[in-house]
Image (cartoon, rainbow, N blue to C red; front, side, top):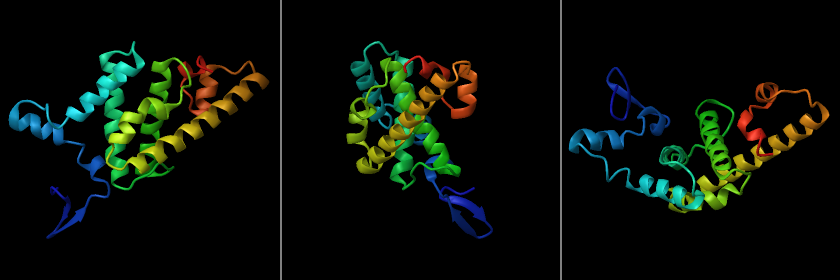
Length: 177
C-alpha cells in the first residue's frame, strides 16, 4: 500500500476513488497529530448545527449522522463520481438515498430535500454535481414511493417487509406516505 495507491512492484496504481480507498481520514490524521480534530471537521460540525436548527427536534446524533453522509457525498461527487447501479456509483446512490430518507424521517414528512440540504449544497466542493446527484435521487425515490403507494392500494395484504423486499423502501418511510 502506498499513500497514492496500491504498490505493484516498483510502480503505484492510483486509487480509483480516494474518498473510498483512503477512508476520508483527514480527521483521523489531525486527531493523531494534535489530539483533537476541531479544524478538519469544523464545516461538518457547522452543518450538523444547521440541521439541528432547521429541523428542530432532531438529536445531536442524528444531525451528526446526516452531516457525515453529506461529507461522504461531497468527497465522492467532487472526485467525479455520480450515482449509478455499479460498484462505487451504487454505494454513492445508497448513501444519498440514506440521507434523503433521514431528512424525510427527521422532518416527519416528504419535504423538499433541496430546501433542507441547501446549506450543504451551497458549501460543497462541486455544488452543481452534488445538487444534480441529490435531486436526481430524490426524484427517483419519490417515483418509487408513488409506485409503492399504487401497489399498496391494489394489494393491501402486502406487508412492509414485502414492500421492502420488492422496492427497498424502509418500513418507517411508509408511515410518511
